[in-house]
Image (cartoon, rainbow, N blue to C red; front, side, top):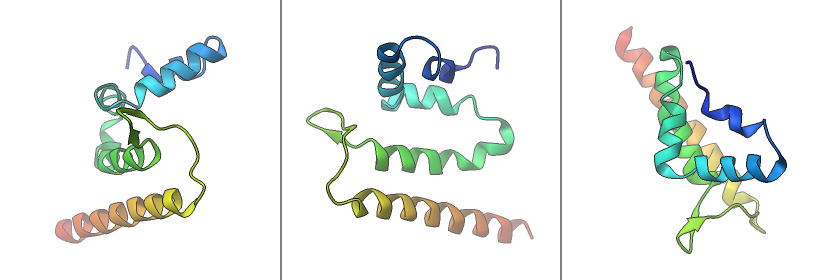
Length: 97
């Protein structure tokens, strides 16, 4: 693409980069990021949405960027996201075969 939203994740000063990352994880701006996926990665968009909702929970109306005391909360959510994506991709492959 002519523009790359993620460029703001690694250029500028720390506070700008942090603000860009947190802002881009909001629902509407996140969709602007995955719109830039190459067509061959279209089937991974559901996985990215699931991972986003697992890693950036909404607490008190804002994105929670802290760390859980119980790491299994995050790990279990990520494992479930990948397992769900793998199952879906296997079913898609089977339907094509």
